[in-house]
Image (cartoon, rainbow, N blue to C red; front, side):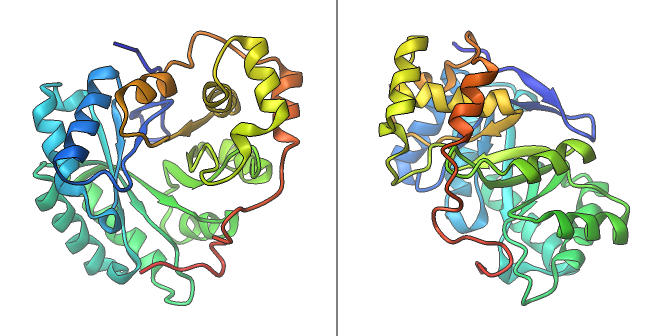
Length: 277
């Protein structure tokens, strides 16, 4: 079994440097895939109300036989459940579907600025944390200005901001902002799904240099940047490959070269305009 190192969040919680994305892992096959990941050493499991698989994630936690305190389960509040009271109700609904007594990391899935309720949602999450329903609270797809407003109006800084991040979109300015404010960057779509990233000549050449796969090279790049990638795979062998990135390091020049592949967002998911309910 692999050991995935942890870092300490700004609220004192230990947080893995790599986790499992569970989008589209549903049904019995989804449960089995998540259990296999836990067996391989994964301790961070990322789900959301809109993924429609919180039940499967909770079942996998129970079937795994791993002490509950060793696992960190993340869920996310959807746009249709924004608001102070709505956020608390959403969290209780997630707990019921998960069959767990707490959520380890609760995120706002998207800010949805046209709705304008994300600050009230944040206040509801603070209350849920104070009630013991969740341990850590954070956001997803938030900008620097949005996070600054959250802190200014509530005094509470998110522990995590989960954002699109990969070599085509390394988000250097946002990562620097996070570092200055003690916020952990978490990377969704860390391998730039449905793109040619893993076939880039630079990636292939560097992977050969280090004696690893292109996937491992890119995931190690995330680790070197100080971010937590959450790659998704239902295949146990691929899961183990994805997590086996903690026994080598990249040179500064190679990290920089990979970051120079930058193109920008791949799917137009700009939090100032893109909204999900």
